[in-house]
Length: 487
Image (cartoon, rainbow, N blue to C red; front, top):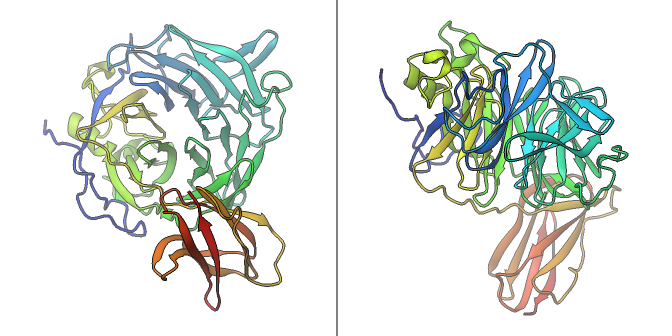
């Protein structure tokens, strides 16, 4: 059998508008450390559609039986390919489903596509029962149990889910080819006492995506100030900035459209879409899985995990999961030893979701391989500086003119707010200059804004005390005001 390391292109960082097979390597490569057996005593037992990581080698797999819409969770602790599974699960259980139970309150797990985990071992499920509940379980030392928490969304459907550091929950209502999807944001269990009691609090904020399509993935940074969502239908990823308390705006500086294709062995053209997303905090890398839509056969010949610059949407690196499986097994759809050999390839590439642990290892799943894969990096992952500036729209009414207001507070240390108004759709730049006219920093660079009033928070912690000018530029106008940093 030919052994090949994971194929990663080693070229300079390029624009996302080119073919996605071109990607810059970080200078090392990824390898699959292990893939859980598709056999007793370590099997998940059915199609595995998502994975949520609590810490290294401690994770939860989400199984889905599409033929009768049932779902269940399988926990792993101290896992590798051959061990770690908690409890016993019959192999290919006919009609088995897990239920969330709290006293006389009972909800069946049905058609769940995604889960999210928190460091305190809570597992959030985007469930598709009649009321579209967000169900909360907890992973104990030896099993997964129901908590007293759930939230009824009354959505038309749920797909992706993520949780920020404060416990706020973000779920996607998918949409379709003619309907725009949404991101629904809910307060944390600590903030909202209705979790598990009335269970019917409306979202604290709802984002309607700009295009129709099925919104499958969602992920946020720790503070919930950056949100990313994937549209499988039109193959885009969107970036939003803001906060649940002040609202969100679409960040035009981030642009990603998946253009990757593959000629399959039967000469058909595979056109995958972006699926699961995960924002790796500390490193500030956006991970995205790309795969065919529940397609076996030649569909196994494509499956990748992309690492993406969170500021621009440019591809930084690529894990070619399908190529890895082929190199390890000699085929795109096989795994020997009744699903146990090799121990580091799931064999049937169908990578739909992704997560990571505290040591920056990556966990993905194989839907048709019924397995979870752990990927390790043989170098040190770089940290990508976040340069996105959050701009919040405060007023949707059309202003009578362009304007730049005085920053407040002023003098200030270390942050201040700058407000400006846009009369009609315009390309805007906002920059800070020294009193001698030298450019200090660009807060906004050539971003298109619709009419309305906006505010941006400037962090001047790196600036020395003194006077500065901030300047707003449009195609035909320029406005400047003075501000004072006082430390």
